[in-house]
Image (cartoon, rainbow, N blue to C red; front, side, top):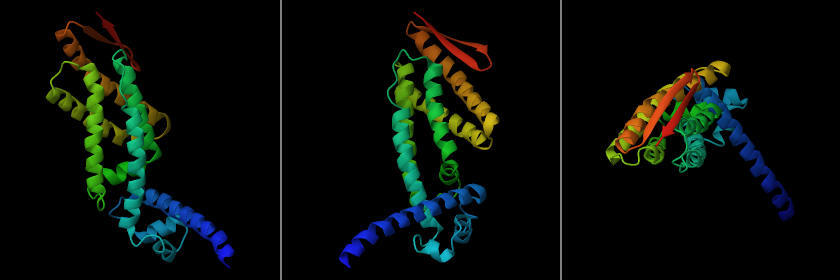
Length: 231
């Protein structure tokens, strides 16, 4: 009997993990479609193709589902932005640095649109609000670190203000990105990059001019904004 229990225990655990993943995937779809407030455990169970009783074996309510889903996404998000906002070489062109960050962040949000639906809605469930605030603060610090490379002599308050503007512009653009698909989505991603570069380029140019370095931004084609530095 103990041998049988040892064999069935891991199998039961594996089945349980698969069921949890199935329910979380269903919840993500429901939250994106109807929003967190208007969703229900019955809708999530229906989307998952299971009975409400099966759902309640794993989660007592929809808030518990949202918190588990949010925890997993926050963990993945932390790992991603740690890589996306890694230290930048000062010789890196501005458009290249901006493009790399935008690509990483939009890829994450396009893979997990429920992250935006949960974290930027008016009713973030439970303690996710506190976790999101902590993530936001760390994210802002990471953006400041990247921007400081291009504004090495700017006061800290200016760097913080610029970082907050970039984050605000990104969030506004992300909503448009997520509301489209296919080639239109890609077009909006490119537009978002251009908006950020066109905001940052004059700020960087002014900083470099004040410190003996000139930076010029040329818009050669609608999709190709390049940066040229001259000593």
